Image (tube, rainbow, N blue to C red; front, side, top):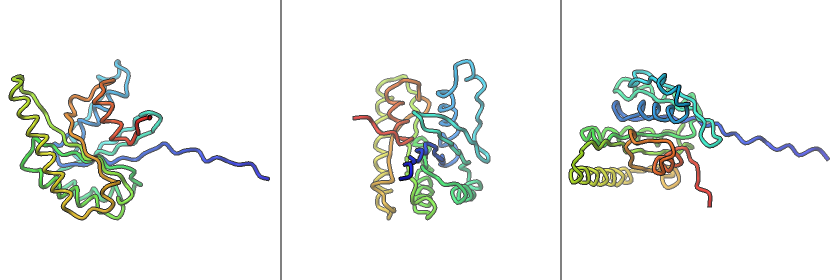
Length: 202
């Protein structure tokens, strides 16, 4: 009898980070890099708004993640397909900036274009609704937060009215202020677990 050879589990993941210009893609990558670096190195992280693309590699709970942040301006969006047709994409993080209300419908349109692409039908999609709350007045703060939650639900309803391949198994949503992403903070950990497909231990 021959020896049984166990195939080593592949823990590498290729992740596209998409969204319109100003959605928060580069900011998300910077925050993730900050969380993966020693405090003395954080000052060296410099990621500007994406004109072409940014690429970073991070480790998260034994997973080796390569994240591709691709520019979201009208011209660069034409080249999104160049990436997902040449890279085996495991997951797409699609960011929608709820503060940019005028472009919410454009964001949904671009998301729908991607999610039904043949090359991405095996990929999971995590739709992150980004927002910023700066009001020190608690009543105004709460009112804006409530509105963002309502806007998120309305956009999800609009999205689900469309025909989406294997929607129940491929789509996840969350509402989060990317600027609040912090090491060890419970909501931040929950967000990253969802983004990177880490299941909670029972």
